[in-house]
Length: 67
Image (cartoon, rainbow, N blue to C red; front, side, top):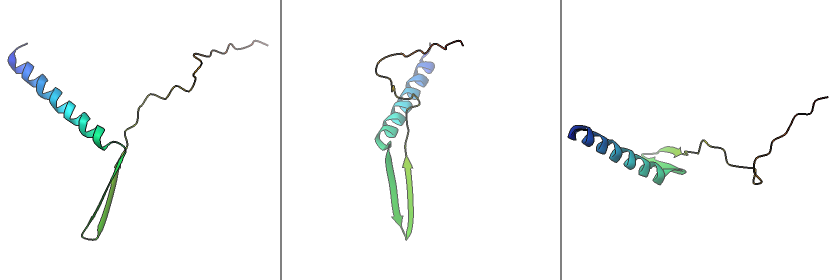
């Protein structure tokens, strides 16, 4: 890799890390503003896409029964 590619990757990494820090700071927050009699409200809620593990006893496999 030459110096230009290394610099571009470093800048991209820096921008991504700043974005993650900002989202982490305002995640699950509500922003409200009252300016000149106008009320504005916005909220940001980023959730995990992986569902939580509800089965604590491990993998449960059910075998279908033939009749």
